Amino acid sequence: MAETKNSPFKAYDIRGRVPEELNETMAFHIGKAFAGLLNAQKVVIGHDVRESSRPLSLALAQGLASQGVGVFDIGLCGTEEIYFSTAHYGLDGGIMVTASHNPQEYNGMKLVQRESRPISGDSGLKTIESMVLSDNEVFLPSETAPCKPLQHRKDYIQHLLSYINVANLKPIRIVTDAGNGCAGPIIDVLEPFLPFEFIKICHEPDGRFPNGIPNPLLSENRHRTAQAVRETGADLGIAWDGDFDRCFLFDEQGGFIEGYYLVGLLAEAFLLKHSGKSLKIVHDPRLTWNTIEITKALSGIPIQSKTGHAFIKERMRKEDAIYGGEMSGHHYFKKFSYCDSGMIPWLLITELMCVRGMPLSQMVMERQRRFPVSGEINRRVKDIQQVLAFIEEAYKKEAARIDYTDGLSMEFEKWRFNLRGSNTEPLLRLNVETREDIALLQEKTANLLQHIEKMG
Image (cartoon, rainbow, N blue to C red; front, top):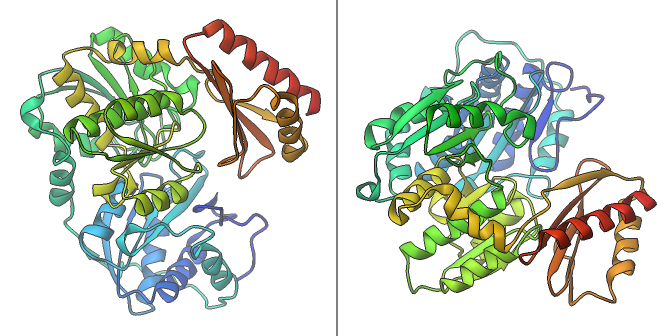
């Protein structure tokens, strides 16, 4: 087929504008290529709530079936339901049609192979792209989907509940903001098993996104959830992106909890459940001190990995780590085939709140005081490597430690920073943290930004 002007094949997944960059013809060819790459016999597919998702999913199913693949369709779902189904039922692969938190005119796909191992640019996605571009078969849409339903949800819900002891839970009130994405139906199915009162907003799946694209990572999208928590006197707020592979938490005051502190809380949750065992916790290099301190205090072993789901999952398998977390809101679990979930984290956090008998704000307050952070700051630059070299030269005499796991990390006695380039844009991403010193945090962040702007 003809190459699109802007290829939808990215480093970790497929994403593009519909229909210019991604359409049903391409979905059909992707299905054929996926089947050929994996020599697949059984594949599960599913899709998010976008209006273009179901047609793309049906075309994908046609492509898979044309190669003799048995296609199982779980319909409207979250990405993690594809991960779960692929691994739990021993299938050869899984494909989720989703653009997650991208604008409405976009769609995409996330692909996994056996055991829900990721398929990215380094593990087959480029091969699929080449196969798709060289395939000239004409796509003829079919009105009937060549696939079978897969009743996975009962097993999936039981798996989610296996991470907690329901007897530990208490009747707290929780605002859930699905953003009209795919999380709402899962909350409805979980609800009878939990003693919580759910206050549901933007709950119904709606591919028109009447309340805006669900992306709580953007600060301007958090007001709705925070306000609902304050107005209802809830104990907790939870918001998800469209395919709910990430969740974001708000404390009882409506305060947004930075993902960095959730990594520490989840490390604590697992280490407390397995007291005395030297379990490994994988974290990314952007912000580290809080996670390292909590992990070591509970006899765990902190392991640093390059940022990105493919790198985190690979490192977790290598180290046999029980949990891995990124400050961006992705949380990975050994028992979940080392995949990320947007449901498991809030279940573990609510259990921890109930066991400790304290509100979320109190649970993170001391950690925020111990290790205040700048929040991720992005700056557009002409030459990422040139700026990194300049910053390293400017600070290396004072640095106690320099690390290149992902970009440039430099540690000093009372502060540290990580500066890394975006994989897709000419952007530098800066994160700074200190030891109990907000004034130092502000000073060092301002100094670094001055250096970056001087070069950029």
